[in-house]
Image 1: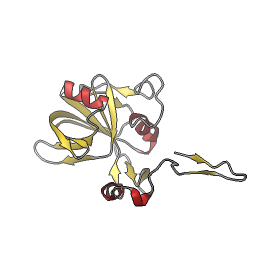
Image 2: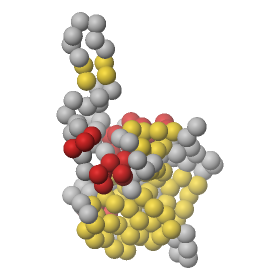
Image 3: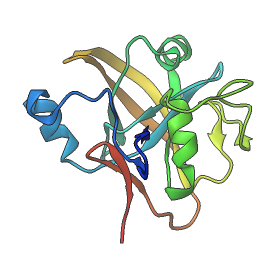
Image 4: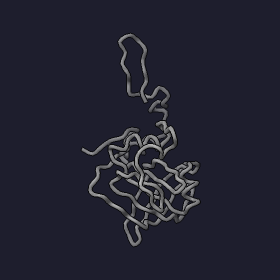
Amino acid sequence: MFHVNQEPGAQIHHTDPFAVPADQRSPVRRLRGRLAAPVTLWTAPGPAGLTVSSTLVADGEPGRLLGLIDAESEFWAAAEEAGRFAVTPLGPPHRQLADRFAGLFPSPGGLFAIDRWTDTPYGPVPADAGGWVGCRLDTAREYGWSLLVEATIEQVELAGEAEPLLHHRGRYRELG
C-alpha cells in the first residue's frame, strides 16, 4: 500500500498508514512474517479461489498437502462442497493475480474474468502456471485463527522449471 505525504516536496512512501506499529504486533505474527513462504493459488470447482502462503507438501505414497486457509472464504465453501481442489505454485509474473485472490486488488467481472485459465476436475488453474496439483479433501479443523486443511494429492502436473513467488515480511520476494 502506498501512503501519499502531501507536504511540499514529499514523495510516495511504501508504508501502510493504518498498520499496527511493530512493537504492538503479536510476536507470533512477527515470527511468521520472518519465515519465507511460497505463494500458492488454491482453486475449487464453482469456481472459487484463494491466495495461500501457508502450504506444505509431504512426500509419500500417497503424497499429502496441508494448508492454513480462511474458513469463511468462498474458496473453502466451494472446496468443502466439491471435496476436491487444485493448488498452483505462483511465480513472479503472478503478483497481481495473487493480490486479486487475496482480496487486495480489484477484480472487475470476478476473480476469474482476467487471465487465461485451464479447466481441471479440481478447479481452474492459470494457463501459464509452471505446474499444479489436484487434491482430494481429507479433513479440516480449526487451527489457531485458521482452518488446517489436509488433502491427498491425486494428480501432479509440472511444466518445466518455474521460479517461485515468495512472501516474506509482508511483501512478495523472488529468489536471486
